[in-house]
Length: 160
Image (cartoon, rainbow, N blue to C red; front, side, top):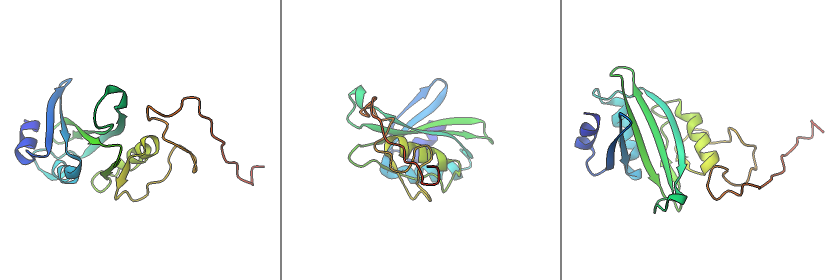
């Protein structure tokens, strides 16, 4: 029912759908993500009031044309249903719309994804480091990040 209603309202925006381990899953066009998020949050048939998780995926070793994905996991307390939403993000333009306007919990999820994969969440209120220090070079969860790379951790003058 969830995927059918989603396709009914966003036929051109839904690139593919499937049932993943009993939960509906859909791939959405990046340029229409914001409209789909508004719909998922506000439509009475969905009312996804919880964003359970958001993560980045580097698919470069799988031979896919588009390198990155952002994966969202939603839950509706009202209807007790779930949805996994995936958005393909090209390496040449690693940007997607923020979800912080609709789910405050997206704040830290998006900051971690930006920090680890370099995916920019446009409209995010404070996209700054969460886990890594300022000046950290690279994105450690990308498949091409050198495993043996070492970086000098800055030490404040107060500590010395």
